[in-house]
Length: 339
Image (cartoon, rainbow, N blue to C red; front, side, top):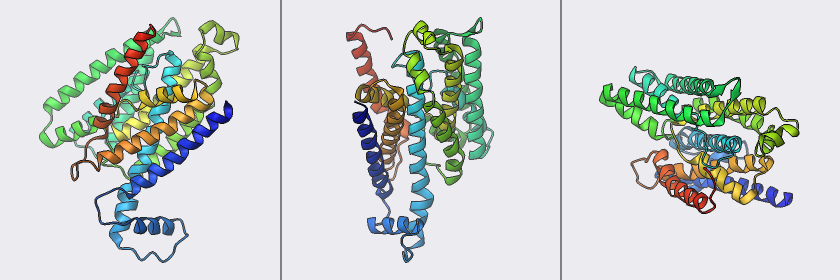
């Protein structure tokens, strides 16, 4: 059984590599596969006589590669965060945006865009407001020093509605260029991806995913009842709070550079749970790889299927996610499970 799970993870890693190369080759410029391979080999020191036109390096290294890496990172971050939230709440309908982080980030980004700040400040604003939102929701959910899951979900819903209203108000007041920027940011995408964004989120996302993976035993225990988890020596209150903080930081980091990308954190953990089981030792890694694969495929399609127009990634993930969400609802209805 363990061997089968490892094989599945290895297959997912191979698929990710294949999708990576398909994505880097995919585009409407007059760049051949041979030129791309020569350039990549030249960059890693295996080919020193590439003699390629300057535009080839610009398109591949400056435009496509940071976008691809960001898609991989954001997909992994959202999928792992969604997996963790589903485990904590013992509910497959939970996701990385359950605590209202997406709406808080949208408000921060909309506010900074409306005041004319540059991209790096918009990213910082989205991150700060998403963290503030998560912290505020946690405060509302704590009663008698105990974090109540039901209050957390309800608080997240209420705060999301509040910030969504503020975003709508900012859009109403915005001039045409700013309004367009806000709408595109909320839709989610990687059209402004650059190496600066990669350098910022790469260490944060990797560290947080690694930290969450070290808590796989505790996450497995939280899948049991509160009493059973305590009998295994788990401090449920402390562990749940730590994991929620890490998960919120992970989601905030992702959202701050990509905007709102829906359903990745819902679909991927659930599919992997059906394939690989509920053991978070393997499920977290599998979810991260599946999230990277799905978001990278979606982003490649978003910049390819309606050339020269680019479809926001968030639209495609929603089109994919809504039917899957309906499938989940029907599945739970048939099994009489409480959502």
